[in-house]
Image (cartoon, rainbow, N blue to C red; front, side, top):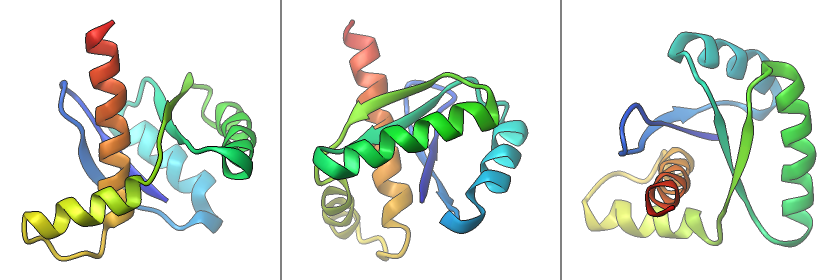
Amino acid sequence: MGLAFAESPLAEPLGIIATRNWGRDITRICEEYKIEKIVLGLAEGQMGKRQKQFAVKLRKLVDLPVEFQEEVLTSQEAISKMRQIGRRIKDEDAFAAALILQAYLDRLERS
């Protein structure tokens, strides 16, 4: 699971956590970074349904607002952008998370 973080209008990749220990890791990260809101990418179809179910569990676990940002093909976009800047492709999930968060921040700015 890719993670990104923003203290300003610019999102940046934070890292990747294993999905089997996600609860403990997310709780620790939220406390460490003083997270105020979580933004999840929302895909279409069956994946989107699973993401919404995950959001319910996440809200209960961390007691923070969880919002969605539509995302389609962000992993492929992340890989493409990483190649453009000459970055090694190993953290594409974190880079994709930063793209999703940046799209959310840009949408808020336009509102």
